[in-house]
Image (cartoon, rainbow, N blue to C red):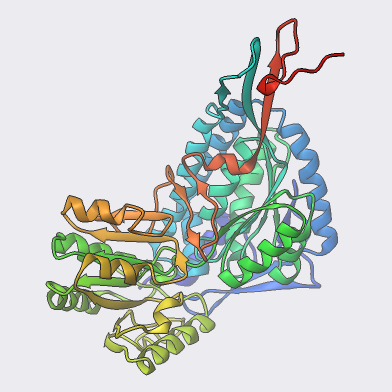
Length: 513
């Protein structure tokens, strides 16, 4: 048994956290406010992890003004030098990886491996952004006029707002922030109130690096409730881009407010991810891919596998083996070695899990394994990973439930499988398990997956930082992290230069004085 109290004490001391933590950083920490704060409880055992003070409108305005001034200075720093600062931040995160991973596990219930993995993802994104500092490219275009040069440049936007979710309390912030900072932006971060402690720990480390490097405060933190801080961010004309990760409902609201002022959004909303398992699949790879996709982070990833559509030719065998794997999955304290499934984030998530199962059964679904609160753990928000055999057109299977619930479907033809796959409003991640090239290409064609991410012989869950991350339909649109996603954090300027002695006009237009 791990000694949770000892782990908490040691981690808090080394990361300079206390029971009462300031929640606003703008080059310095604002003092802890007694007026309003967020209480953080660990989903592992329900214990009190401390308090984070909530930003006032005055705190918010002060932070935005400082970040605006920082942007004016930071945007003039050459890209390669900006990239090198991000490298130094990543180096510092690497030195504190184990401690930061513990905070993630304590606050949101991820297993030790997943907690460490989240911090590693931040580090990797930072190193990716470092190299990107030398690759902020523009296009040179053939001009139709003689003695003219036509080309494009990508310039920084200004202040980028990032609103992150509890399930990835630091990694998704880094996807946006490290890339945005490398192209010359400053960043204001509003984390989930359910994961505020991680944001303070991360900013403690980043703030020290910026001070040591005599860098303007390009990263700001404003903890608070979405009803206040989130609304301020969405309506603020000083913030040209807001990146939001969260529910479809909240995403629609934020998108409306930002678009009303002609601002930009990057939205990463619902995921109802499906894996198709062909009779031509490698059974072991398919079982591992579906199982990991559904069980990782207790089903609380936006990319979690929520539906598996299996060929009728192997359905019974696959179902039997998957049920066996679920029964072996160890549930419990995520800091214990060997635990695969930790707790849900809070009691509300547990209630949503129960309601979803009740709806599924009432709509004709059959619980094959799981379906109950996990009673072997005395405290915390633990539930049994659940497989439900889906019958017909069950409406609940079109909803995203942040819990380890997997709906199992059977298909006869690949066209039928794709119809089930694409029948939901969300469009984030997808997977197909097959060794048949024709099936694979069909899945990756315009007739196949309608998602932003498509995988062959690997899980829907997780994504490499080098590829742009995001989805279609109700997932919201926009891309983060890799590939050319950096362009979203810039403004494009098209430039025409005339170096000749005449002024020829486009399309051969004549204009005589």
